[in-house]
Length: 175
Image 1: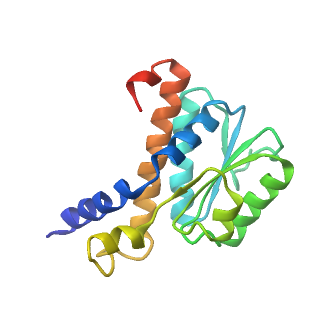
Image 2: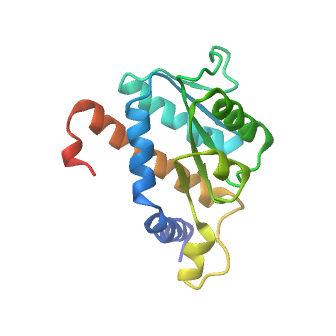
């Protein structure tokens, strides 16, 4: 199997394990959001920023923690935090701060028992270990973290498609 086939195969193992009701719950929350702030470090942050681009296209003001023009998070915001480990200090702090303010916190992580996993609701779990165990694989053929970020990007793309469908009134065709 070449590298592209390996990547497609591994993504194909993980995506079916994702909890569809959590994806729908995230989409419903975001469709109603007045404003969205995303957070994530390094490549996880890039996946979060891609969600911003999708949300902006459907008219939802969206910002990323660390940007020059990001407003202060308030209780009316919806905050999306992406962290593979669910333990990255700045990401967890953003989630904790938002939750303490009364904001909705949507998490994307591979560990539902992590700090982020416990702070977020809904929480999109990307269960790499479960997917690999089902396929009797020991490890990914990709560098550390890469598969999580690929799956986070695809999961958030699915959420964004649902948000667009809900807001544009064609949600009955995309479920």
